[in-house]
Amino acid sequence: MTEQAELAIIGGSGLYNMAGLKQIDEFYPETPFGKPSAPIAIGTLGARKVAFLARHGIGHHLSPSEVPYQANVFALKLLGVARIVSISACGSLREDYVPGDIVLPDQLYDNTRVRPRSFFGGGLVAHIGSAEPFCPDLSRQLLAAVSATGAVVHSGGALITIEGPRFSTKAESNVYRGWNMSLIGMTACPEAFLAREAEICYTSMAHVTDYDVWHVSEAPVSVEIVIEILNRNTQVAQQALARLAESLDSERRCTCGSALAGALITQRDRIPATTKERLRPLVGKYLGD
Image (cartoon, rainbow, N blue to C red; front, top):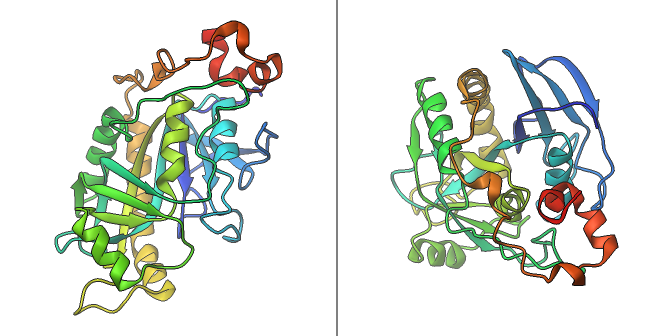
């Protein structure tokens, strides 16, 4: 794999391509976890190499539970990606996060049930730290880029990831509000945790499309409502990402790049050679190339 991109954009509902990306090549690598959701486009945005991946595949044919999260993140690691910005639609669980606003959450609650959550296993155990699941340094830079567009943007809040693909019942939505969750979505987990295992900085630009189903004076969430607001916000997202690519610090000022340093607990002589080889792009620098 010769092409390298420092920054990757994972586009969610409503963002299926990256405007302004020039001199585009496509890569569709095979990983130990299968192929990614779609061919990865790599081009230049300003003077920076940027990769773009459509999370739900071309034509949005993958449900949240069907997205090959492991393959997606592993493929980006193979391409040299050090930072990921996730774009996603979400519901608001609080009055002050209004449909049309953009939120950069700082916490995650994983309420999914059937998704593989880790690259590790098969004889190699890793206990990754995830107290701060979103990279504070990358989030800070993304906040500045979004703010510069003039959009209404909020920093912070806990995002609960549900299995989907159905929307919540009123009872579920009110329970999540009782847990002090701020946002509800379907794709941040396990994506954020896999990025941490891959030592890639990860942050999210969450587009508030609705009030889920808890708000008594607003219409319950529907696909039509989600798409309408996402279409309005797409231009803001494109502008913010272009600004981020232009202003992104060359050096990472965080600990994401060494997240595995103290996480590998398995005795080295007990790690199967096949597992070590399969995960070499992740652990090679710790176990020896």
